[in-house]
Image (cartoon, rainbow, N blue to C red; front, side):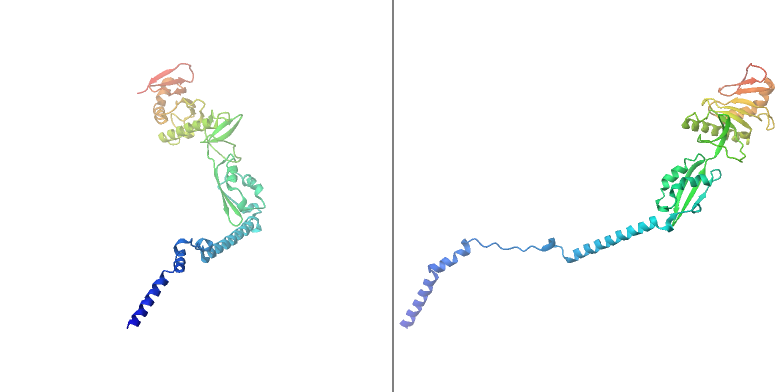
Length: 311
């Protein structure tokens, strides 16, 4: 027994001595004191985007190139293909022209011959057509593959105008027009709207003309047919020469000063009282209706003036 216990004590002492040996302690220190080797971090390639993403980009790029190529050759076909060219005058359809000749319209498209209809500058050609005096508005459309359609709205004349020694026509906007050959037109003659008058002033004066014509026809239908001449030179006094005041068959021409407005009331007063004024004054040369409270009647055979109070 004593021997066994002695052997156990020796074994325990040997273990304790081994646990405190210097070389073992030295081996443990580097685990805590030595600088550790940096750990290598492996980065993912392509910033984390995988092959499916780049495959989609490749497909889209290829599709874009194919699309642009197809568009290029398609455009070349549309712009230069013989089936798209404007070759003959009968490829241009024209409607709405009565006074404007077809030749005058086709002349605006001379530079488009042998050119694709897609290369015709529609807005530019529309502007050129509207420079033709008789054209009020125009539209130009492409009809594929190789046709053009033109629709014109011509100006409507409302009066004759003295243009030098000749009579021209004028519309409600003050545009002076050449008289068409072979057309039978019946209008009053207007003065004071010659080409020397600015366009905006001519238009304002023609508006007064239109207002007057509508007013007298409203009072008595067909009265505008009895108007022979209207002087628009003074915006404050519309001066009119007309017949048929006593009755529609009366051919006596009388000059009436209508002022600048209230044409309906003034004309009604005129036709209601003209017979009486003529009976009192004899043959009437002119009547002045400019004043609100009196009418000035000038006899044809005397320079005197008779004044009739408005009732």
